[in-house]
Image (cartoon, rainbow, N blue to C red; front, side, top):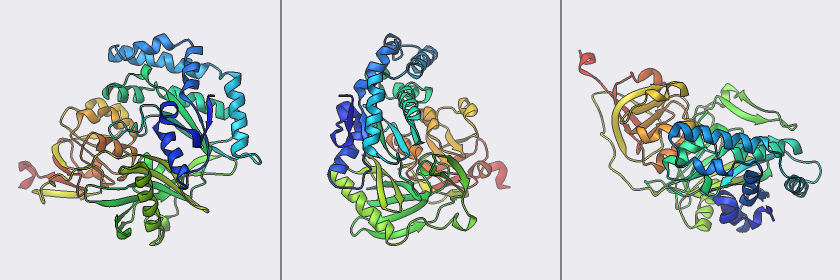
Length: 429
């Protein structure tokens, strides 16, 4: 059977994302119900599209040829209609999830190689929210499969030694949580704390680094709330009941108003510790909050955190602060990147300085020694990618692209969330 209830999801057929949620749901944790289109469905569609042989060539090809071949695979997956059996099976599964009236859906990729602490795939494959009708569901499924062959995902896999033709994508389908707030969490930082992040609206605002989320730090015993850093949440992703998904401004009074109160933050932290206990490892999670309470949307093993020496306490110059998003510290020349078109300017040993820390920046992480961004927070996709590569990162550092001169030597302390900008001789006077 190529469509399984979420409760039956297992990693070899459904990927680690779906399998972890199945374990959490089985432990009575608040995971939305769902179904999973297994990896076998992807493989049969790949064969029907006639691009299996092309897919096998990508891993050994030169970079330019690899991306040309991957494009051929991607187009084949998108253009080939789903089989009648799969399409009808999805229609039945959707009725089982929300018989009347049909709810909006979230359609998420769950790759077989995804979810390990050193291969999180964070933000590399596609998720589609507010899928409203059956035709859109079928299109979203094919687009999830095709996202395995996007330039972003192929670069990530090749950099991590994953042969794209040797893996596959299952697809997780769940009712959309109409979130009033959403965010992420780390169950165990290198300082032995729980960290929560939160922003208004749906989760992509935090995951894609579109805002600076609130940051909550809690002791694990209790848990006890120790610190709240209000974010800068000027926009949010919302969804109307008919599936109109859009970014819209947040009321100015709520820009720096914490999304979680003093009771909600410890309650969410207790859920995080229960996730850690079920999965028997430190975890990174994604969550959403609606009128019914908290919902767990994803849980994956976190990279091992080792306490590393902090950076220098001070440098002859000025400093910026932000959210720590990677342990350790590093120093190098600042390279300002304001758009993806400028990524080729980044050289080995540079410190990447940018505005929005989107997951597409994963392509240049092997070249840089540290990352600084004006937006984003400790649980964004780019933060997860930086942690798995053990690259210091400070996100949410306001005005970084304006205050850090091109080429200036900067010291990035990922333990404390501090960026030191060294003063050069020419500016000391």
